[in-house]
Image: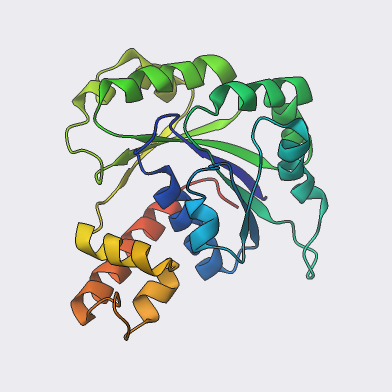
Length: 235
């Protein structure tokens, strides 16, 4: 089954684009076809790092958002259906929810055999808890919820763990995963290269090329993340 993955968290700086890039690299390395959409008009970081797979989409336009669902009617050359990754910019929850509601997207995807996943990227702050509560109240039973504790954005997630929002999420069958922190200097080099994670670990020359041990650490980070992703309903 293909999957429709909304990578959100609603606030800026929680690692949504990194998670979208990581999921894109996971699909590439697993040989799973996918299409990416980037809703961030300011930075378009998903498109920048995975230009061959992702394109910008206007989130406050039904015509733009309809392109996302339309991907599931376009078979690949070998007859498979691509999964979809949507990197959600901050403050996109309202137009997205209107489109999903008016289009009855979630039951439609279920009829088509498409798994709908809402990824909630979480830092250690209070806003993360409140925004998770809003997400669950908006969509309730139906989609899958993947709560990502991003250790690149915090280390004490007790506010989230002890919250009513987390309890409700678990009652709805949410999966809670962790995203390990990648060494900050290595991530800065990758970002300056505008490189995919594959390119970062296979480029050995150039001003911002990673050193031997940096490449090894990125490989280990990818390997650990992939083991976690293997437990999720992604295909």
